[in-house]
Image (cartoon, rainbow, N blue to C red; front, side, top):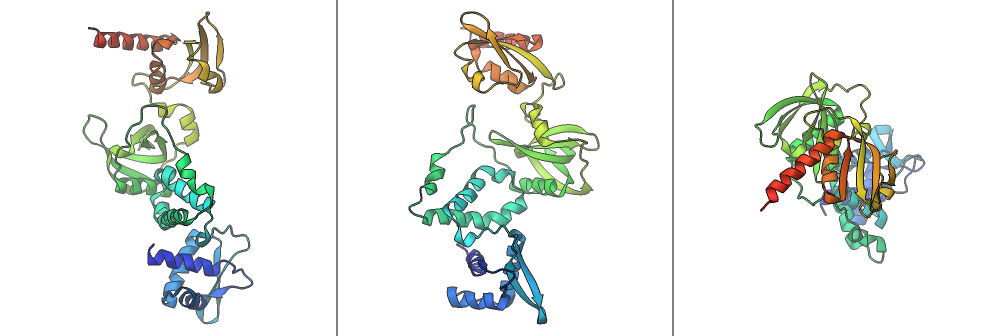
Length: 339
């Protein structure tokens, strides 16, 4: 562990019982560091440490006394996380956040948290006799489709994108669509979405309000602009996803909800009883071996890929354009595999 991180943790240990009624001076913190932990630093260094820690732990505060003396304490309403005394559950939480959510954190937050991620890993390695320490070995995230290796994302690009999302500024980027030359865009960044192993930037193209979805790993260069982004009226990221936009649109028509009618065999349909396609899903008898499933869903490529994955166990009845696309695909497969 670095000397700086060790010092932060020791400072937090010294402060753990300090409240407004019994604050501690910077010089006394320095003395205790030297006396209890053999950490020799200047008073100015301790003051800088305390100022930095107060940006992370918002309950850490101070009073200014005579001769510019600063006495530090925890406010009564502070929700204090004492990193120096991490419990197994707290250390586990930091570790899981880093493992599964780090791509969704702004870079500035990750930079601030990185020392504590490292300490949490060390803490889990040191803790003995607590079954929760083994929790990371007992959980996993499995993709419902074929597992793919995550593409490499330019870390500088990721940092700039997270910065403009945080500060709500416009972004200039150079983007390379699959099989096409690099294109330049000025966009209003709206959010980040993880879809499987790929992270996407949701944005609108400036000065128009056309929604665009950019795969983060295909952004070659990015630059924060000195202009506030333009927020589309009523935009909500969760609603954007709920409307099926992350299933990707067909190239030849606008994304719209459709009334899907599909015939499933009775064995294949079982999972839809537990995980329905929509709130208005209805399953009725079709014949002795099959059922008819109807549901209102968004008409996008993800729906098509999902249906195609069932092969001969599914038949699309409606809408007609989706049925015809399935037919055309099947004919193409027959031609490909014919001997």
